Length: 384
Ligand SMILES: C[S@@+](CC[C@H](N)C(=O)[O-])C[C@H]1O[C@@H](n2cnc3c(N)ncnc32)[C@H](O)[C@@H]1O
Image (cartoon, rainbow, N blue to C red; front, top):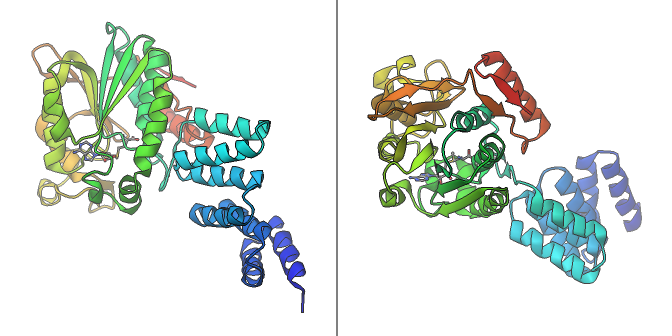
């Protein structure tokens, strides 16, 4: 019969060898007999963190800290686990506690600075907007088409969620426009409407994690030269009527996906968009002419469905876009139209535009975006 210490050592050995299932079994046996061992709670927490079980990691690090509140490593790892879940204030607090214990700890100071400077792209359901990497490039290309607009460039975004698209607007405004830019973000951030989304998005909105991450990202976006960001916490129905007509040069519609909401947004945004400006949006995987109209009508109050051939799309967005514009210019689910003098709309063409790779994204997604753009051949230059 192995002693308790042998079991603990074997757990560490299995963990280091990558046998997480066996390591976990051994940690549990050891901790059942030795709940007072902070080092075992900590080791188990590291295992959970490495395995992507962040909530469990936090629980174990907190237990370790309950038993040994002066341990700087425990605080540092608690900060990392919290940050990875978007609990930014909790992560800051954990770093603060670590630095109170060791004010001169340069590693913790560096971690704290890294977290503060890093856009947060990891939502509860994976990387924000990762389902469609090329769309971010086209969004930046829309800014490039407006590069000769007199400052300030005013951008309106309906539906900001955690601020991934905001990063794209800010990056494009800084690098492709280069003058004063005001970005207004409208979203109720879980106060209402969260239930229309699937589990993880709904959970992130209702728990306020999405809003916490948005605020972190908004702060970073607004720290760029010439960029200012305003968040308006409201639905578009509440907020848009307050805004003056023809005020914006770029409007991005990415809020409610139901037909009524999408059509309301597009119609109101037409009032708000200046001639020469671009209205664009997300979630147009299929256009109405590619669908059965009765099927669209029957499903227009759904968020997201699979069509007959298995293609997944947003029927409410498809129908609303078609009713307002007819056929639009669309690029991997991103649609865009330019408003002309007199109020009619023309298709948007990116053949002479530059687009940016979303550098705030991990390398594999940037590569995917690059491949999609190369395949489409719809852009002049892709800037890394
Ligand atoms: C798909 S997410 C937006 C993703 C974000 N644009 C991005 O790319 O990172 C949709 C967002 O729209 C917001 N939303 C839903 N209904 C809305 C409404 N009526 N007005 C404004 N925002 C709304 C939700 O709270 C959610 O945060």
